[in-house]
Length: 221
Image (cartoon, rainbow, N blue to C red):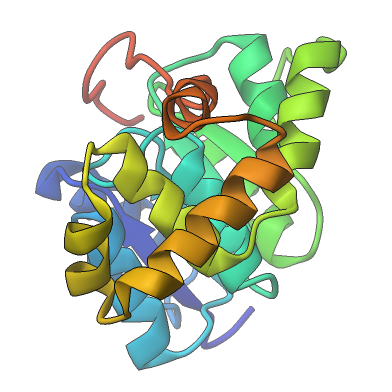
């Protein structure tokens, strides 16, 4: 695992520092990049190249719940992603795995668990907290939602996120530097793939990806 590259994406600098210090004591040759928002995470990966591991805060700005995970898995399928969250809810862990995460690390995890998770995921395995012997089965509703979302392209996921923010076609076109006609085409494709009839219904469906943070910024270790 020498010279592994790890991106730590969390909006709290103390959490990023704690993760980096924990990992570097186990992997002294690892190189790190940090990001405080979802957009910074994407920029970092594009600028620095695909890392060996992305540690991704489920609740940092711009994530929009699991929408951010779905987008990154679609845009950078070669990058293994470990979700970081204060939650220890089995259903949330199940959703993270269903949407493409390679692991789920609670912010209450011990130092040894964090190191084990990083080693296992970089080695190509999956990792879940000790004591989670079996995740709940994927519900029919969650399975249907996952199938619809994974049909969207990265650009369509980006547009859907902007729809969720209440942006109009003109604003989306400006932000993405594309024409309004292209935005309309993306919206039509989104509605068709999500099997809904309106932007409002699409936003409601996307809202099901939101995840409440049960305890914001629980200390690590």
